[in-house]
Length: 112
Image (tube, rainbow, N blue to C red):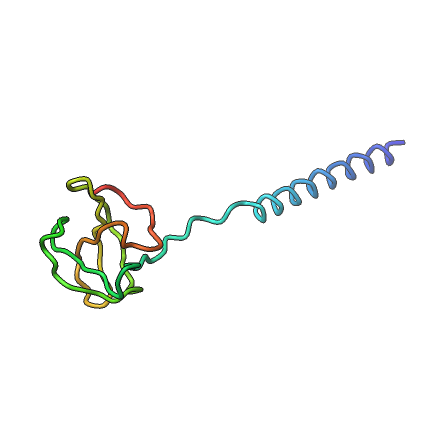
């Protein structure tokens, strides 16, 4: 009789352990992937290049970059009703402002 009781307890313990492992594996497999912090790029649908600025205003063009050039966003700011992204443009390595509507693949960044 005691042998049957021990066998039942061992069976229950094995089932509980197996259930825990299955739940752990299933939970890991179904967990959403972490948000990928990607590299943004500049894009102007009306032209083949994008103007970049030293300050967040249209009056201070510093350089032009081709559409698709990588742009690492650091933060954003608002100026005169326009939202701007501040970050590094990869063709020259400079840190400049771009109107937010000209940034593709925008990532979540803080306010400047």
